[in-house]
Amino acid sequence: MSPRAACRLEALGFEQVYDYTAGIADWKAAGLPVEGTESPGLRIADATRPDIPTAQPHETFGIARQRANEAGWDEALVVDCEGIVVGRLRGSAWEADDELTVDTVMELGPTTVRPDGSLHSLLGRMNERGTKLVVVSDPQGHLIGVVLTGDAQRLATGEPPERIWKDCNGCPGRWSPAEQDT
Amino acid sequence: MVANIDRAQLLELIDEGAQVVDVLPDAEYTAQHIPGAVNLPLRQLNAETAAVLRRDKPVVVY
Image (cartoon, rainbow over all chains, first blue to last red; front, top):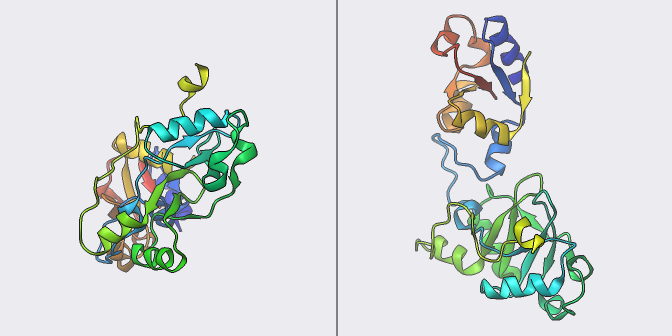
């Protein structure tokens, strides 16, 4: 429908016409807000925190673990150069040899959820399976953050989360190119 | 020439003052739409209804 609308606007003389072909479904799947009468209820995005430490596949595991530990976490997510989630470091992998590279110890392809999903539904699944942390990504697989059971539980019972996250610029524990160079 | 854009480009255009147009039927727009979008359903899109849009700013349809 939007391609025809875009063509019609051009025919009407508009010179700067763009078509967001993925539409509102893509917008919502990225956890972005919508307006309208249809209340989405609590969404996964509402409980998502972006401060999970990250590592790159090629870096040394010991450095990634130290960075995560210093940020107060005992796990990290592995993202590629485009920010797409490719692995997870936790559990027994957390005890691996410092000299190994991240890609040799990480769990491959962790399960992710979309931020526009129902938080209540996710919380039900987390409680059922005893899951403490769920990875949230956009439809292309880019890391958005994680949902912790405690945060989801607080929101579901009407309590505010410990912190309202706006973005993760400067989150402790995040891999950065500058750090890689040192 | 109409350019297809992705979400990141849409966000940049919004920051630059683009006008976002939801061309879905009124009921769907009323239920949910991108914040700030105006509704110009495709079936009603003509010179008269499009007059609400500024010609000096980018227009993004979805």
